[in-house]
Amino acid sequence: MQKLYTLHSLRKRILAIVLLISLLFCALIVRLFVIQIINGKNLQNKATSQWTRDLAIVAPRGTIYDRTGSTLAVSYTTYNVYARAREITEKDSIAEFLSKKLDINFSTIYDKLSQKNISEVLLKMQVDTDTAEEIYNQKFRGIYLAENVARYYPYGDFLTQILGFTSSDNLGQTGVESYFNSSLQGKDGYSFTQSDLQGKEITGTLRYYVNGEKGSDLTLSVDSKIELIVEQTLGQIMQEQKAKSVTGIVMNAKTGEILALSTKPSFNLNEVPRDNLTELFDYSKIKGITDLYEPGSTFKILTLAAALEEGLTNFNERFYCPGYNIVDGVRIKCWRTIGHGSQTLVEGFANSCNCVFMNLALRLGVERFYKYAKLFGLGQTTGVNLSGEAKGILMPQKLVKNVDLARMGFGHAITVSPLQLLTSVSGIVNGGNLPTPTIQKVDSPNIRRNILSAETSQKMNYLLEKATNKHGDCSFLEGYNVGGKTGTAQKYDESGKIAQGKYISSFIGVYPANNPDYAILVFVDEPSAGAYYGSIVALPYGKIIFEKMFEYLQIPKDNEEIKKEYIEMPNLVGLPISEASEILIKLGIDYEIYGEGGKVTRQLPPEGETVAVGDTIVLET
Image (cartoon, rainbow, N blue to C red; front, side, top):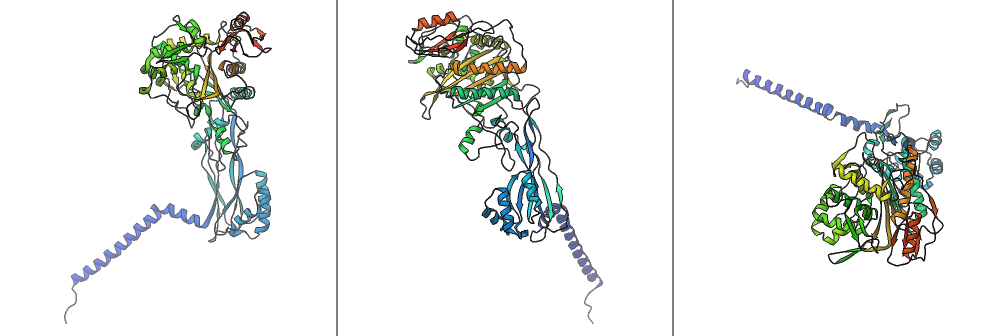
């Protein structure tokens, strides 16, 4: 008989079988490793999602405080109402009850309760605690409540643009609520219940919760008392000057901390006007950083600082103003068309003479003017930690002609945001260090760069002091050494032409004038009560803000001996300019003349109103 196999071949076959079995076991081990170790968590989550139903527990947002610890925004518990249609057996009675309690149309509720192809459907978000308790007490099968949070602003219509507001799903939409949303939001938790294959809750099974984590708290640089002073004053401006809008800013000139920032009109943050999106968008804008304008005479602070730093002028240099300058064949008027005559640099700045600043800008030349414009932060964002900041507009340097440069010297043909200009001025007056403005409280200043020498900074402080205190030290605001500058600028329409009758009036003030800690800006857009001059429309309200701030901060007077005298305005209408000015000089009242006529046709303030000796009034001819 023939032998079919040998001992050697048998061993080979056994070995092959053993290897095959080993490979199969290895493959199974690898597969188990992939399933249990690599994909285990993912598969476990999928399995859990099939036999459980979860509802999100929204984490409370962080609390927002002002620099003194006052609460500006808090979260409170609300509830979301859900329905699982597969569990509902009494749709009519449930829909009728919920439609009344949730203030939703019956058919809308009924349709949602009928959607059995969906595991669960949201009926309403952010239901108050009392309503949620009434629903819970009904013990409706298939109706569930999940904790949510809503935002509450204790002061309502206050810091509207800065704080901003949240959406119904608790996300920041504007202001610091949006900018700091990732840290304020926190981490949501969940509520789990076990369910069968159809998604129905299995009675008697265990419910469990994964708690959320509250968001981080935020402390703002804002002082709510100073903010209140600013907002009340802005409301007064809106009422008395009938402006389109008005913005106020108070900044720590050394640290860049924003102590107050507001625009009126505004709205109550607890009653957000979501049904009027145009109004909501406009009233939510932080116009102090988003809106650009030609600054007018307040910009002269920057031109003069650059000229002094370059050694191009000095306090005693005399300038002559005939009421205009001719540059590149173009006649450019001074605001006082009859001219200021011969004056020193100090007098020219106090008189806000356009001719002086055309001269200084031309001395600087395009290259040096742009060097300082960029050094001061123009055409750039300030770096403030708020969304929507505009850069401002500088003409391309290579396109600038002398006629453009002359206009730029007194704040035309250039645009800035209110905060951008106030930041530049803060850097000029604080020793020459440009701060980065911030809405968060800081322990030390964040200085972007040095922009001027300390010597030039001191000269500018002196000039700002003399510009406001024209009738002696501390005469602008009784006993306090305040420096400042007013501005009046025309607006332009969409075609780039001057919008007739539309102006922006502004005032920038600093205190104490010799070494400022505080810088403020009052910005009035389109006043329509009859006056539009910065000295009439903006400056008096800057004075109010300073006065109330000093009272709140308990800052003593710099000179207790200064006592202001008050007089009643005489009737100057119809008088020749020479006669009217002689009367005002005798009374100690400063004045500005607008127009080229020889007689007074209008006076601001009018006859009978009380003004202080040293105040500035306006005569129109």
